[in-house]
Image (cartoon, rainbow, N blue to C red; front, side):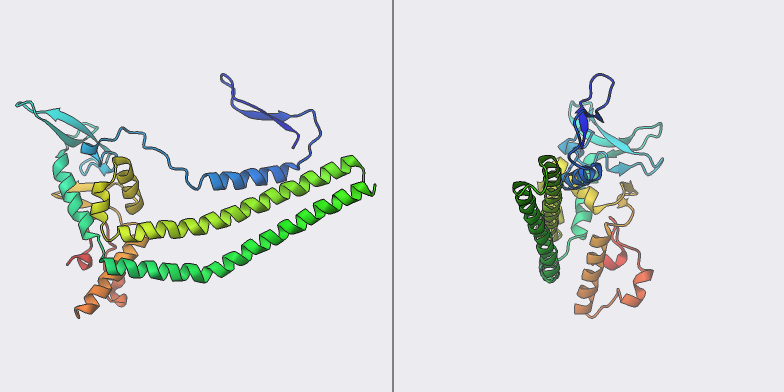
Length: 297
């Protein structure tokens, strides 16, 4: 678009300067292509945790001190008999210190309390697949529409070639028109790619995520520390508090909270104990890491 990219050097950041050649691509068109490429590239942009992760301190970075409400860290300590043990502690003047094994054991119990029956998770997955299939028609129409626009642009490119051969336009005009048409084709193809990847990715994650709810504790304990941290970040919107032998936190991820509430309602209806009626839902606290009474057996 008439700009030359200057890489970063020393204290100067990367930037663009006007080029000496004539721009063949409109600036707005160039920026639109870059926006779409960036949107696609960011879809799977997972950032690694900054803090050092250890199996023995898998909750480090996820805990908040219940005394001063600041982030807790974890350390290893050597006992008098020479054995090492791990604990979580506050980083400030307060003396809060918690045994890591105790916290992990209690946390495993709470993850198990969030598990839903396998037959229920299978039912949710079937419902999502039906919904996906019902929306598939609209998505295909959008993709076909984009493909039709690509064919139109390609026909215009052929027409420009014919006009050049027939000397209806000069070579400079031909190059300018062809460049613009080809860039528009690039944008349309990237939009198609975005449509296809977003929908297929949604069902891929559903097929993995929904069954996970039937064995949340097993998945968590069998995962690497990095995956555990990502899993917790998806389930809990805020960091965890441990106080008086139990965990407390803000509400769960809204989607998971809704699934647990609906699952509990179905289970109670099967036993004739409708404890979570729709009319009383506003009186029942939303499930967090410490399940609401309605979510306990």
